[in-house]
Image 1: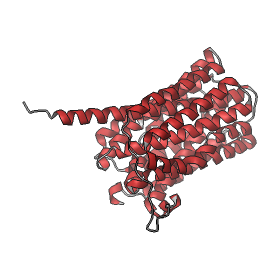
Image 2: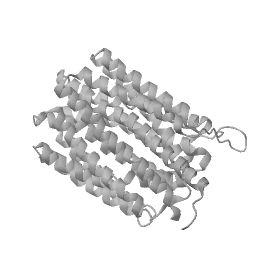
Image 3: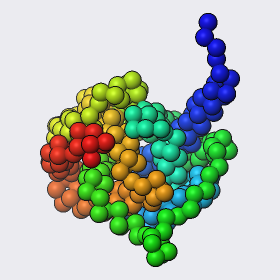
Image 4: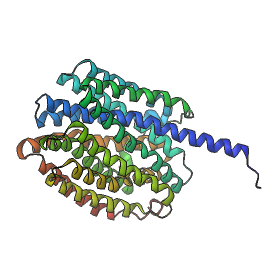
Length: 398
């Protein structure tokens, strides 16, 4: 019988436990964010606010993430994981608490801003730490596949928790339930090793600018693909509650549609670690974007919750594999000492979209109705599929 190295077993155990706590911390932050992105617009609709106001509220989830992402990335590069993650969890908790205390529209705006900021800061720290656990690109893809399960779990748990509490208790109870999730993130931060690398400097000793990273062609492509994916998520988060309300669906039925996406995306992500050696990111992204485009073109033609859930499930199959491939490639193309900064720049690009697109969706929805929002997004995703086809077959080829 072969001997077992106790030191190797301990190392693997520490690695597995660290990865598990990263997933748990992300579930707390992302579950809170997704639950709030369901609850806030539903409460606004219930209070008879129009599409333009809802679009503004959804945009507020991106204001502070847009402003703070690059400084947060530099903070993570300098100080490591714990400080940024705890800061993000506290901001999320305070944001939900504001909504618990007051259901007024101004309070919902403050709440959306703080929860968005907390989630973004914590996510940058979590993603950077996950990428630095890997030794080689194949292992990095596997790690990000496991880490990508967290948003799938959170997209199921957060909206479902909120939807059930709204239907059977109250909106305030939904906010109280969501406030518990970032507390779980705080508890999970203690299990990750402490490291504090220095911020990068150039030959003159001055700090490098984050936008210098855009000189890398492959990073530009990654940011562009991320922007399209973010616009898709924003359109779905904005338009689905309105479409569901127009179709007479309950909050829990709308949550079921969102949960369908979470289940199928999690299923895809569970398979990627076992297929990492054979997957080509270019084809993965191209097929996923084309599949998701078809779903958005079909959505406005549907009337039942079950039909919408099927479409959301297909979208989950499409988008479930994109995030691990994009995150792995982003780490591969970025200098190790600037990975937090690159993630901050990526977050800035994404949240600029999240800031601008819901306002645009609100304007379109107010004038033309919600259906054109789906169709415009589907057209953009079709163009994105063609752009993704031009990426390298594998990151190591770049």
